[in-house]
Image (cartoon, rainbow, N blue to C red; front, side, top):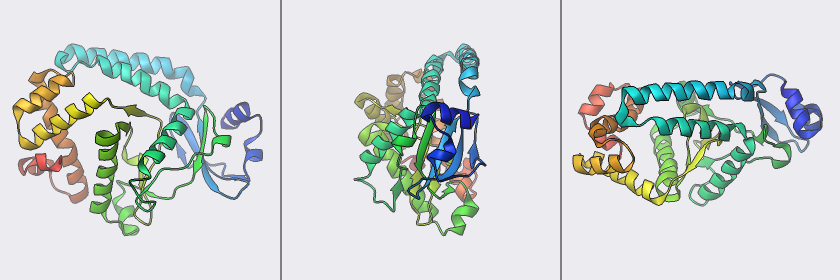
Length: 281
């Protein structure tokens, strides 16, 4: 089916478009499969092809998700989950159009390249002539997943330096540029042999308005200072019931604490007792 998708989008067989294509996918998920290939110019590339059944089952998946969020809104009214259903619908639509991912990758690279050297951050280049709404061809990037402790140790990576760089990359996205990669799970953040951070899968980005970014700053400052009044004001401004401020701040504190636990083997409870706020700074 992937061969058919490529033929429909480019009017040629995939074997004619590339010098070589490995027939076995190097990655496979419900949305797409990724193949390693070599262009006629000799460059190694990653070819991402959308799975054909995706569009058929999209609306069923969306209806299920919206029902789930409606149930959560009923059980926990203060969290106002309705926006999550709208955002999920928008998110899935974005991911189905690989042209959007190509535009996001190009914009992010242009935005961040003046701030990070080539050995610090890499965002794969898009091969536009070999990309479409359902096919995305990008330069191949070798790296290990950021949560692969054994792999990071094997390449001699400095985990603390990498964590600091990732924090700086996303800090610049959120607080300076307001153009944010919204799917930064460990599978989308790789580390190269030279220690560079490789950011992949740019299908979902969001542009944050200035007032949202300022409010997010206020929330984190309140958390770090343990200022409940500031946190309540920021929580309300973000559309969350102020009565849930403690719950909201606990979630923000536990996420970085869990990262510390995963990397250093420290229990989450001891991290929180020892001052989770400093972890958020």
